[in-house]
Every structure is written in C-alpha cells, then in structure tokens.
Amino acid sequence: MHTWKTHLEALLRRLAETHGDAPLREIQRTLASVLEAHSVRFQTPQGSDLPPNTALSSIRDQPIVVSIDIHSQVLGTTLSQAAVAPSDDHAQLTPESRFQPGEAATDSSTTPFHEAFIREFARLEQRHEFMWAGYVVRELLPRMGFPLNETKLILDRLCSEGILAISKVPNPKNPNFPATGVQLNREHPRVRAALEAQPAEPPPNESPSEPTELASS
Image 1 (cartoon, rainbow, N blue to C red):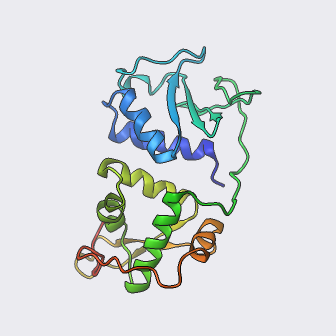
Image 2 (cartoon, rainbow, N blue to C red):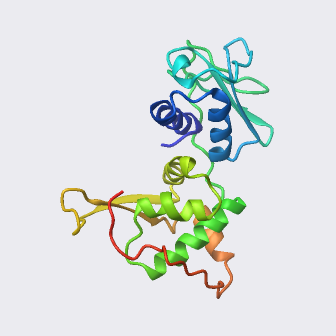
C-alpha cells in the first residue's frame, strides 16, 4: 500500500543519499516540483521554519516537520521516523505519534503533466517493443521540461502511484546487467482517463533519441 507518508519517506531517503549537502531551500524546491505542490517547508516540531541554508544531511537524525501545501491541504512527516499525527488544519509530526494516513484515493482525474506524460509514453510504447527506464529519466522527462536532477524522483513517483511498472529483461549488449524497463499500467484510473480523452490521431512527434535498442539504466 502506497500512502503519502511512505511516498514522502522514500523521496526523503533518496534525497538524503543523493543531495545530502544541498541546502533545504533547494530540497524544498525539488520536492515541490516532484509532488506538484504549492510549497514545501521544513520545520521544527514547534512549527518554526528551519534556516534555508541548512544542509539536508545535518537534520537527518532530528525530529522535524515537513509541511506540504497542496490545494490548501498540508501534510507532514519526519525525515528519520516520518511519524505523523492529524489535526484540524494540517498533519503535524510528533515523535510519539503512530498515525498512519489512509491509502491515497485513486480518482480518475489527471493533472496536465499526467495527461501529457501518459499520452506521450503510450505513443512511444506503441512504436517500441521495450521502453527502458534510462530513456525516461535522461530523455523523455527532460524533453517535457523537467530538470535532469529531478527526473529519477519523478519516475519513482510515477511507479509508486501505479502509473508505471518496472521490469527487468536480459540485456544482450551487457548480460551482467539486465535492462530496466518501464511499462504503462493501462488499468490505472488516471491512465484510462488520459487515454480515453486522447484525440484519435495525435500529431506525430518523432524524435531521433526515441528508444530503439536496449540499454542498461
């Protein structure tokens, strides 16, 4: 079961590993972009904002609040424990709390990003037998306007939401390292909604960098 809590925990763990020296202002901006949030703030349990120049690695073992403003709803978690407690206005972290948010609703509505990505991915998937994850991270998402340093997190998010599924296949060019593939989950409500609304004949958008062969990711 994927929840906001578990998804945010995974994002924070990955950021701590790859961007531990980055200041919180950059981490907040990256999270806001990945989560399509209005804003993200790192705070103390008392509700005070942490200094924006603080390195992410320096707060890894401290109890903190991560407040995410999405359509006027704010969620919270910790970097080390992700212990969350509900309140009337927002979810606030306390180290003793063990509140587990419910599973995210699987509504069929899609954001403009989801629609554009799903349609483009479906178009490419029809033309190519194998879609490898490295292509999505290094080519497809940057082509759609996302910074390269955020695309791995975006791919993780799409997989955690169930929009994409990860698979491993033998790589004839490098047998010791199977190729990581991604497939569109056409049974997902958001995928169905995006594809049902797609024009019958979408305009061609061929690119010489489209995936035409296996590559390790």
